[in-house]
Image (tube, rainbow, N blue to C red; front, side, top):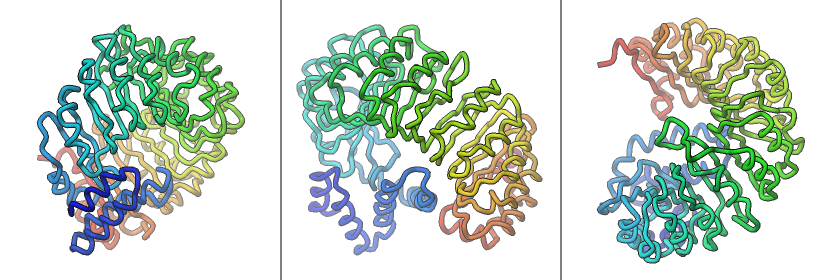
Length: 497
């Protein structure tokens, strides 16, 4: 990259225009793949995840990374104590995992000169001298701090550092010790521009929420993630406590809730009444677009009827959440806040009665549903696919039904032939690798090749026999998808080396 372009991107990290100029420069030099990749990633940021235009962009993005990603990552500087994540954002590898705060002080000037750099992952402990030595890095937008706080002064030292002033997304992960710390950090004068806060096993109930809702805190916050379960522990911590009664009361009465567009409360042990207070909050309003209740342990039903009438959700995540009561299910199927619905995640979800899945697909909100993720649903896979084959989902363009058990090839063929299957832009089909796994073969491959139209842009089938793969790859459909990067398989286990 020319020095001038590199300096322009570093000098204006939030501006897409220097990146587009770089794309033009690459194209003029015969580096069309790099130019296209930058443009594709910038385009993707213009649309919500459920938008149909994302399908073609995701396929192309994936293909370009597979083809050129290793080369582009090799351009990153080799800094002692720094590991670069494989992710790309806005055309560049963006995340640096740094060994320690001490090492972050040593490499901060080097990171500041890396085009596209925007994220740091680092672990406690820190010291006062290290915090004082940290300076604002213009391109830094996301900061993740892992591990338990060992010294109660660590958060206060960091809170005083202007280093935080460029951060827009803050992750506090696995800080499960009894040591207080969030009050000084969340009251930092350098976090007034923070837009997203993620707290995972970070004393969220005992001190995290009280620190969050204090007057005047984080006035620009629009995204909030509070989880009792962290990234490195599989069980809940005695010290963490999750979202307590008091914490839920504070959230429900917090005026800042009115600004929240994304609310995620996964893996918390919550009672129905606690969710009821949240759902009835006068502050939970029309700005809320995404609600994540993944894996939530609610003794009693989720009080869907209490969800505020002003709420108009576009996305809902109910992964690892079962429907065990008919009244709860009936209430969910008719939630007014789902009338503008677009994206539903129900992977690893249990339907106590299989007929409820039929009812779900007939609910009013499915008329606008565009993306459905249903992996490892606790019902027979044949029933699942047959229900989908008979459903009317006029807006659905993306369907992921991998890892479901008791799936036979005939039911997969029926789905592909159905009006739902024919209207898809992205289809992911698969069988679980346990409990009588099915290895999709030539019959399904021929059906897909014969039935699917040019609308299909992304196809994943796993596992599939070599014979089935050969049929699809030789077909007109398969050749088109393969050329675009939209054809993916995994081999049947019996054929794997």
